[in-house]
Length: 180
Ligand SMILES: [Zn+2]
Image (tube, rainbow, N blue to C red):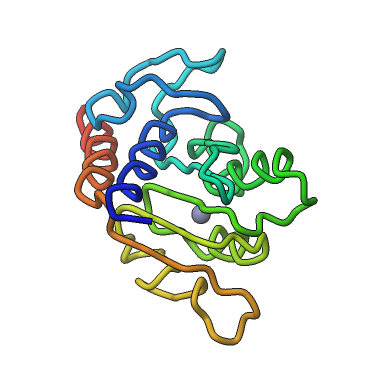
């Protein structure tokens, strides 16, 4: 995979950031400015309560299996991070039980420990992410769960792809929330 290909993956993940589940997200959601607006999408009102993080999973041929946005607030589910939702939907389609062997996950933000653990357990082959997350990141920042040599599966990891765009989406979200 070239860097241009990885950037395409992160662009898809950015589009998924405002979408609770599968399906193409409106392009506007990829920009930070719209992240707090009331945007109807696939029957869900995107009220901006959820931190905008998006993930997309592709099979070994590069065919998209699933995409999802963080929906922790909307679903009232502490595990409803974008990666978890996308992994679940992808596994349902991939046809090899829970295994996502050969698959790639692209996510706008460095995965946390929960998501990095799920990625390893799902045997995802490759992880591409955008912005680094120094507070909770488990792909090299605070921990490196994805490349821990004690685990029997270690995906290839590429971080910092379109990091500025991914960080801007988050900055837009938190910036808007700080306004009265
Ligand atoms: Zn997570």
